[in-house]
Amino acid sequence: MARTARVGGIVGLAGAFGLVAAMLAGETNPSLGVPTVFVLVSLSLVVGLSTAASP
Amino acid sequence: MVGQIGPLVQVGRKKTALALHVLGGVAGGLAIGVVLGFLGVLLRAAIGDALDTVFLIVVPSALIYAALVDLGLLPVRSLTWVRQTPGDWTCSMGHYPGIFAWGFDLGLGVTTRIPYQTLLVLPLSAFLVGDLGTAVAITTAYGAARALAVVAAVTSAKDDFPAVCDAISERVLTLKKLVGASALVIAALIVIS
Image (cartoon, rainbow over all chains, first blue to last red; front, side, top):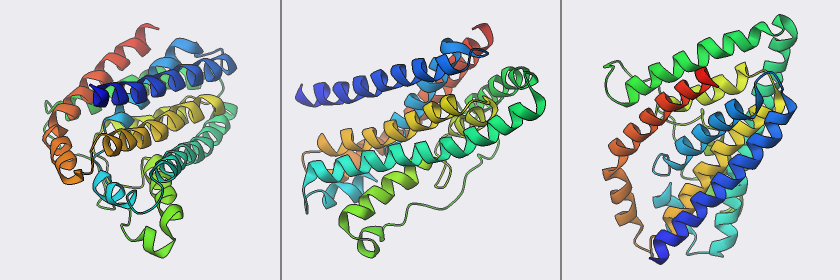
């Protein structure tokens, strides 16, 4: 339970970071906007969180 | 990386070591984001708003290609390199600098072995987006997430790091398919957004 909570907390932290980063970055580039930046940052988070085992 | 960092955090202060690893990951992502973002800004200055069209064609196409490879639906040789983060950095640089450097190296994303083809689309999109802030957000999110994943694995290991490495290794194929499926979804979202 504690392990799940810890992992969930870290994933949540990464998600919050990604959301804030996407909003900040999206505001600076009106041609693409927040939605596109958000999905790209989300993909970065998914790929990053999936590569813990890779050297 | 879990197998290397895990035993090392037993030597010094665990929280300091893991924080430095995350800091290194963020710094690595930030560094490559600045480089790619700057090159993208130069490209935008050269071709103007046509870069947005290039982005909307190239990035979803690359995502679909990478997704098909990661899902195992396209039997082609994966693009990757053999280099791995040197295990002796904690000896040559020192304990904490070595752990920071590992995070930095992995946070760059493209200097070590490429586990998923979708990973290669991240620097490509950071370059073609043509905006420094967005490029930094994409690559820094990757660097931070990768380092946080290591932290999550190490902190949940309860000192049995080989068992965690084995557990992760058993899930590599599942993770690869998850990443591939995510790439397909992201490609669709980019096209319709």
